[in-house]
Image (cartoon, rainbow, N blue to C red; front, side):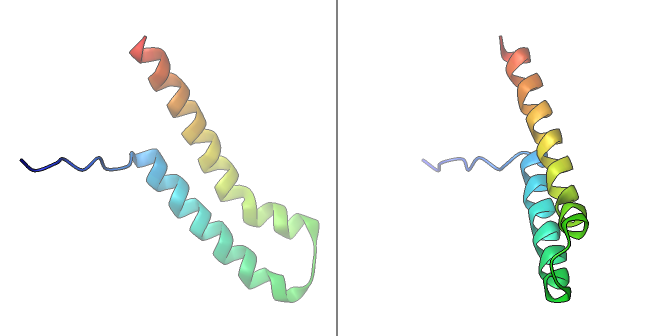
Length: 65
């Protein structure tokens, strides 16, 4: 009997892609020196994706009740 593989949800994939985008943006700007606003801007995609992921997870838990 074949086991079914559980694929990650769309928001989990969005979170992973945002982490890659944030890491890439941060690594390209790291050579220019430290500036807090640049670091905050580079982490913005990851923060927004994390917020979307958390809201989606919370709403799916409420639907299961």
